[in-house]
Length: 206
Image (cartoon, rainbow, N blue to C red; front, side):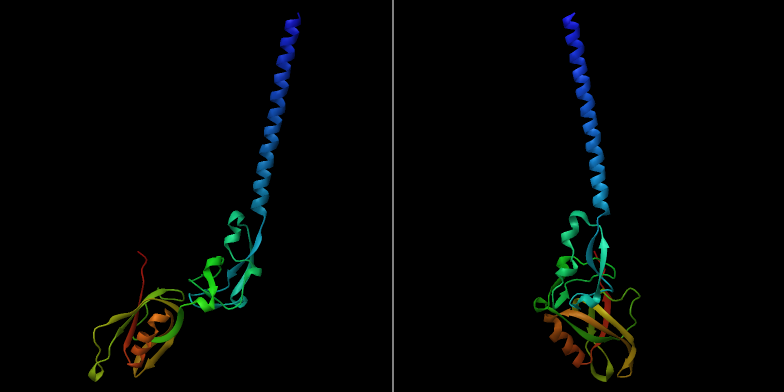
């Protein structure tokens, strides 16, 4: 008799244990789901570009806006409003509305880029717009208004602005402001001074 009672008590104990373990698992599951949902709803303020910014361009609060987004663990990778320092420039093109990664801005003193204005002698491809990476080609001017074989002056310029159609020395063209490396300034300005004929070709990835 006592053995039967002991057996029943043993089974009751394990049944109770399984019951409480089951309850604990349900509570843990609910808590985990709640934590995930709560973290997904948690937003933080970060900076986003209010317009397209190109490499080498000075960036201040005027070109940025504060947005509330949920980034989770990726939050520290993006620039918070209080982290914007003075005299910063973009190190790459940042599209309008894009969140600003911390590595996309750098002190102006470290920038190795500047901008120049050239006039393209040919029509611009429709794909050329602000932020487009282009090759700058130039053909040397020969006698009697003829031009030689074009060559690449800058292999990776970035379009900062596209001007209106204009006329230079009686030739139609489109003015462009390009961001180029400082090492390319001498060749570019030399070609401008010598009245070379410029063209831009979009760089196709891959």
